Length: 318
Image 1: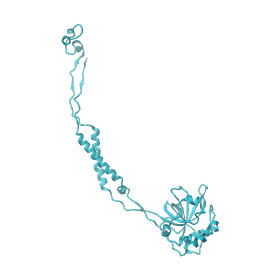
Image 2: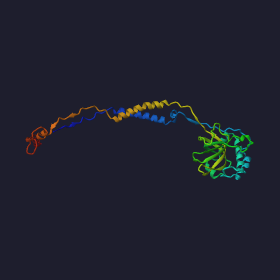
Image 3: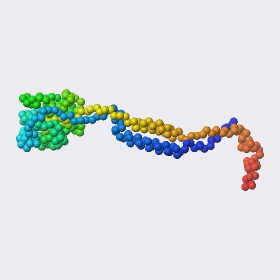
Image 4: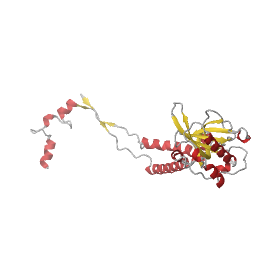
């Protein structure tokens, strides 16, 4: 029976210079940092989306009439006399409500939509109208709504031609959920979609708070909605020209990507190792080794204590 034993090679020789790798890594970090700074700029990614949205206000068009508005003290005093007669939580206007709504409509028609929009409103909070309707009756309010329905409505006065282009709009606010708002407006912005259910259109509603109108939803649940007599300022989405490609950013990525992959592969592969042949020790017969000992001497040459004479001599000399 024989056995063999492998002897390991010498220590692994060093690979590529560590300084070079360190410099390459630092350079890659610098390039990566520059790319991150460029990527954080939204303007560098406009080319990827293919379009940009911009919104310009579109005002309703109607013929402006002559006459006093709510800023006139006498006009406001005359309107305030009918505030106490207005009833909230009705599904339709009674006579008192209709008379006051007609006055608000005249105030709107006596102002340009642009001028009405620039005026400072008394409130832009739904909670003010719901909790204190009498306090804000007839005052100027403004809300940004998502209009979901826009339909023409009959004129309250068939003898006045300026009332022929009336529209009723329904919408809601993002911050107040699905709480419905009612808008009674002379005319609609040019190009505004008309229908029972339209895609949500962003509109700034500015006008006079009239009443809290009662309505029922599809589930026969009853709610109240603030009704406003005013105008709608529409913000349609328009497609802008396609932005040019950010070539510096693209080139930076194309240069940094292969270099980064190469450096990462080199770092993970470890240092370069030169092949060293493995030396094998000659095979030894186990039975012969047991008979003669590790140096080939016969076991009969051992002394009484089992040591080789040479070893015993050295031990005695020591």
